[in-house]
Length: 217
Image (cartoon, rainbow, N blue to C red; front, side, top):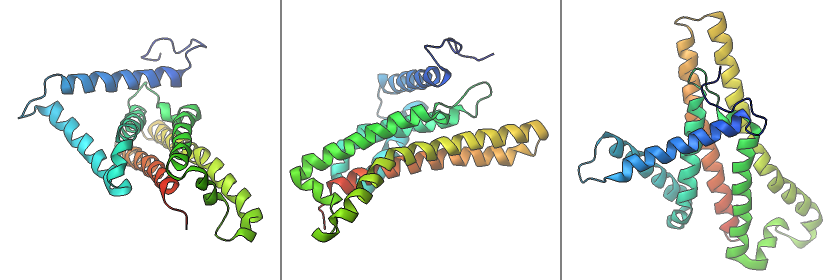
């Protein structure tokens, strides 16, 4: 039996319920950690400061100082994807990111923001990024560029979905066949995949936004 309620309700499929669970968990932890900020922080405040500072460094190193404009979004995606990935390691729980719908929703947000920023920074000249370096190559480059951009949210979604589902299946099979000490390395590998896939999703999201804002050459 699932540990969360409403899982059998057709209006609340499991991935939606677990998504809300992760959202509420992050909101509660953030509230508790920042309710009474202290100069000498406690364990929870210190942990959250380390996490937030790590995400901030990741954003500034890959997007520059202007990347701080996107810090709230990148930090939200990082925390949500990481906690969602890790949730699948808890017995009786499922990972929201093991469902393609959850990942596609996040990828579409990044996709839309990417082109909004491209138009905002470059105006009508943003279209030049799709036309290629030489005018007579436009008939060839335009469809290629359009397809590559349209496939970005799909590849972001499928990559995260495939790794999460594959990891769950592998861990489940190993636990079924050898339920003692041998699954520990597989569990450690799955834990590492959770972190790596979070980093990959966030890094690609930042790269797409930066590329849209760069000058066309």
